[in-house]
Image 1 (cartoon, rainbow, N blue to C red):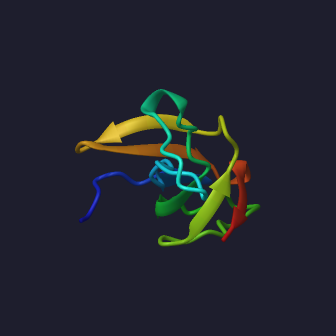
Image 2: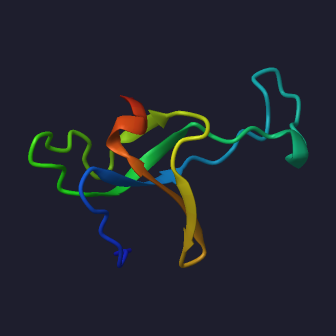
Image 3: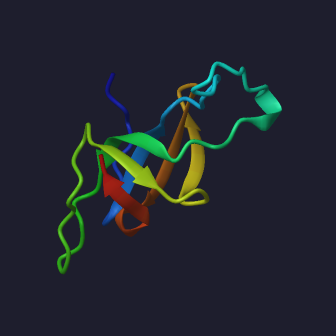
Amino acid sequence: MALNIKPLADRVLIEPAAAETKTASGIIIPDNAKEKPQKGTVVAAGPGTKDEPITVKVGDTVLYGKYAGTELKLEGTDYLIMRESDILAIV
């Protein structure tokens, strides 16, 4: 599916991973206790700045800070848009 959004400069559009519904030991986590995911997939990336080219590419799985980025909803799907510097690691 093609999105009609193109991030500018060093911004990246990320689709967050689904929140965990069960712990490793099998305990079911209720909706109000679920934590915000800190992992996601890069859906679109800007061209970077003239001093720093963008290092992530579409399809990369990344880790980001808990409160990083701005939440937005496009075509019924939740996304985060953030600066590349808010991304902590590529998994």
